[in-house]
Amino acid sequence: MTRDETPVVQVKQLDVGVDYSQVYLVDERCDVGGFDGVPGHPVGIIRVEKGSASLIVGPQWGTVEFTVAVADRDPGADLDGYEDIVEISYESPSGRVSLEEWEGREHSLPPLPAGPGAYRLRYHVRGMDEEVAIEIGDHYFLQIWPEPPRDPTVLKSTSSSFQYWLNSERSRQAGVE
Image (cartoon, rainbow, N blue to C red; front, side, top):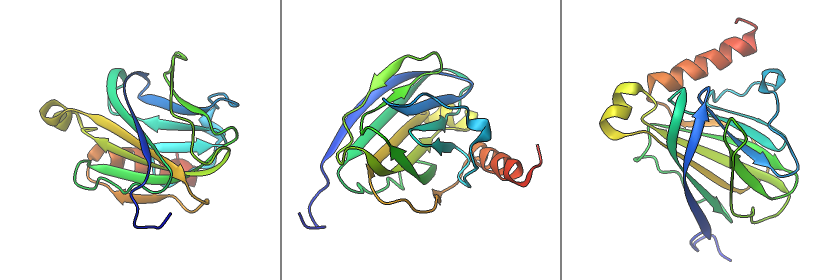
């Protein structure tokens, strides 16, 4: 396969119930961890530990539209369609993951294309600020593809909610609560 070929992507669209502004990506061999003790990452709206990731959403509770795309290689970011976009490395022990709600309801996702191992998560957010969500609607888009670990990256940052989470993470890392 050459780099010019289009990635093979499996997409799943979901309505996900949220509480405490969180949704979780969870490997079948892991539980949702306590993210308080997890080393911080400078991307604020997503935190990972082996086998699980906590994804922050705008509303504290309710139902949000979530799209997950599992690809065999980097499918490219949607820089025009979303206000905030971050990337982070993720380790999947089994190669099988689900999106999990606060109360434990699971939404199974397509199997990860490289099986167990290292992946990259790219999390896109639109409408995280309340006034924007009313106008354009909020939406969350997670891309997953195999990639060796590398540093977290902020690709785009425009909402005040994202800045709040980013600054909260930096304060937590610095020991200021």
